[in-house]
Length: 298
Image 1 (cartoon, one colour):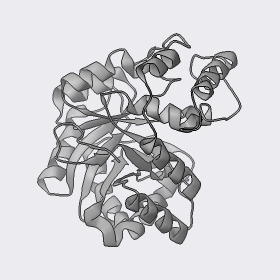
Image 2 (cartoon, one colour; image 1 turned 180 degrees about the vertical axis):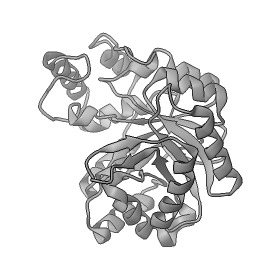
Image 3 (tube, helix red, strand yellow; image 1 turned 45 degrees about the vertical axis):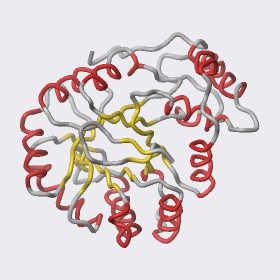
């Protein structure tokens, strides 16, 4: 397993981050899976306050309680569950963040969060207030570093210019190459780490029946999935090829991958151990479809 440092932080993050959102409701099964991941070299676990209405943080906290010094916890804030339980409201205000971090710390059974991330964001947010909240939490020792999770170039630019973020989490895959246009270069130039999600495009690059995805129609999705399969062989399968395409980008710090079963975990670990894609294989995959771009929030 390779390890990289996001931005100007002092964190050393495994190139695959365990995405906890996919975990089930069984604490014991989750603990076994998380412990196997740690033993396999994964040291970073990504969750959020709203996943499973807090249970996701709770089950992670139980699993890593005795291994806290060995792991990096990344969680998120900004969404608020409505009182009736039906849907979410966006709330990036300082008051909400300073209150919600306490609940996350309790659920995670820890007194600090390694990477606290804004779970979205719009250009109309009180951005300076949000940044102030992050800085207060750093001063209090409740978080070590902070970042954002966003696919909006205009929001990303504001935080790059105004905040001490160490990372941005964004969707990136062979079917979503939008970050390549400006976001990758902007973040690399400013020494800000990139955590990717959606490497398998919801399974479309790993054997799932082709469906339209973003601006690609079903035939285009099928063409890309077929290309991934064509260069996958005995040394790696389709999901491993799709993941390796993402990890091959020098700008990418780590890929966040949702893991629910031991089989999925072992498949992902195998991807990190398989021979990397060659330059010719990467060029072949990139040539299959016209690159897509962000159309909104530019």
